[in-house]
Image (tube, rainbow, N blue to C red; front, side, top):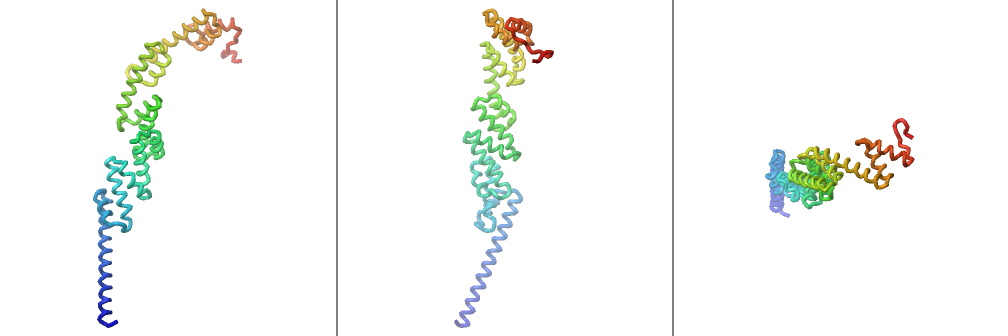
Length: 267
């Protein structure tokens, strides 16, 4: 190889080295700028900057996490989920992935699964309230109205919890009134107590209890008149603190040869 060719080859190598060094420096500056955007909370701009860096350093992870955060803050949890899936081991990627996944379950009306997913997250952001809402939706679907009422009350301010609470309270109140009108005081009492201080529920529960006790007393009286002394005794004994039910029960016990346990004679 001639001196001229060796010189040319050396010049080419030096040129390539400088080009590579310059390129590396450019990537480093762009990377640092992207990091600054990320640190300043400019996640949309940071995502674009990291995208341009390809596989340089941790750019792919930062890019995925930044894209996820933009969508997350917009409430687009389904769209954000795959980005956090790609950055699960970065910062709060795992928690945000789980949170997004729980929202996807909820949006798919899989309320039991969503409730469980939110519950596993503990105190992360508003996961406890999201759990209560999903648990309430699942409970209402399964006609567990007491649990549903509690869940909606505990998640007021989320989604349509307030509307669902008022709607369910109204339905249950109307049902309780209908049961009372039908003379089904026991079931009416259960619903009125469940409704707590909703409208006149507390007063209705007290009134229905009095009517139910009257109803039971009259039934016991009728059973005694029909000769069903055991049935009458059982009812009067159960009503022992109401009117003269205790005396009626003792009188029937004497006839039936039943020894009633008392505080003086518990055996």
